[in-house]
Length: 344
Image (cartoon, rainbow, N blue to C red; front, side, top):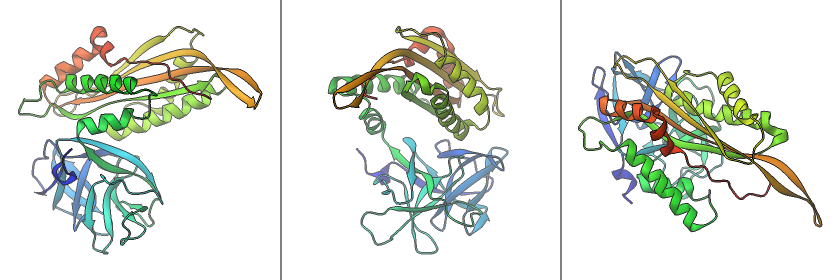
C-alpha cells in the first residue's frame, strides 16, 4: 500500500486551462453543472467549468478566484458518510490549515457540492468531525461525505470484508470485484483515460414482506442520491421507486429471479453517452425470529440486491465497453447474487 500523499496531488491551474483528465469529480450542482475538487489558501471547495475549461475556484469565506489548485489522482475515489463527532478517517484527504488556522479535509454535500470539513479539536491526535462548510454557508452542516483515495485492492477488501461470514466467501467476492474492474480498465495502457466517471457497486437488503414499500423507498432514495451525485437529474426518485417496487412486488418464488434495467442518456458535448446498468436479484426466503427465550416464529422476507454500474466513457474504447455491457451475455458478468445468512 502506498503512502496517502503518493496517491493524489494538488496542481496549480488557471482560468482557461484544460481540466486534467484525472481531476477528482465531486458531483453536479444546479448552479454550475459538473464540479470538481479544488482549493486555494488550503481551503477545499469547488471548481466549475465554462465550455469544458476551468473557470473559477470557489471556497467558503473567500468567494471565487480564477486560479487555484485542483485535486488529481489515478486511484479510486470514495466518498464516505460522516457525521459530527465521528472520527476523521486516517486515509481522508487532508488539505492543511485554512486561513482561520483550522485543520481541514476534503468533504462534500450529498448533492455533490464540495467544501471543507473541520474538526472539533485541532490539537487532538484523534480528530473528530465538527462541520462541513461549503460556499455561501451561514452555518456548518453536521452531516457530510468525506473523501478517501485508495488503491484498488485495499478498497475492494474493505467493501467486502463485512458482507460474508467465511474467508472463502470473502476471497471469492474480492476476485469477482477485481474481475469487474479489470474488465472496465482492460485498455489501461491507452494514453487517453477511458473514463470520466465509472463506478461498480451494489445495494443489498433482507426485507420483511410487511415492510416492502417502506424499505423499497429507502433503497430508491439511496440509489437516487448516488446517481444524482455522478450524473445529475437523469432519472427521478419517483421512477426509481416505481422500478424497485415492481421488482419487490413480483410473484412469490423461492427461486432466484433476476432482471435488468439499462438507462442511456443522449450524447454530451463531446459526443459520449452516460450509461446506468442495474441488475435486480430477488429471492423469497423465510427467517426465524426469536420472540422470547423459548419461542420463535417464522418471518417471510425477500433477499434483494441491486448490482449497478455508472459509466461515462471518455473515448471510443470505453464506449465500446459500454456497448458490450448492454449485451445480455456480457452483462451477466456483473451478476453475483448470494443469499446472506442473517438473523432478523
